[in-house]
Image (cartoon, rainbow, N blue to C red; front, side):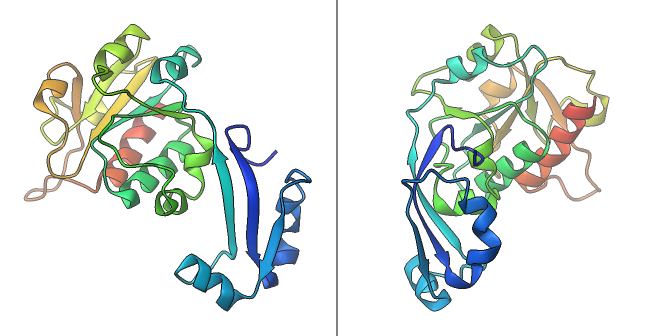
Length: 224
């Protein structure tokens, strides 16, 4: 079964004719009723709107949304969660999901102000991570910290003003890493309810791109 096929059902596939032979092992995993269309590279680029180096584009049906509480309830005892607040840039969203897939994050939670992770650019930047890592969006008014604590997760907020360096954070069985948007970061009210950690920086520089910072933090949480 193709990655994510249990949650996102492929409806059709469009590929560059020159890529057909190389993509055959992947295409053979599709259901028999999923049509595969071939086109020359210039035609494909015109349809997509830019030069599509990979030469493959698919249309899929979204699965019904899963509630954040249901997602957390099904996680194993030792689990790692990534929670995003206010991530509105699709490049950052894709980079964060790529990190989540790379470091074995068990679930991703998005607050209502985050952008859509299934936007085409976010999927592409994530290198398919969005289709691999289970995720759910919180409802308006749903309290992220209450939800995490109710499901026995320890909220760990990443911030330049964190109270302890990331490398000094004791091991946590069920950590939930919270990230805010570049610039404003996480709200003060959220930080006050979490363990806060920072990534020490060189003098005169106080922050990293949110996806880069997440990669460092997820690695630390996964190996600690």
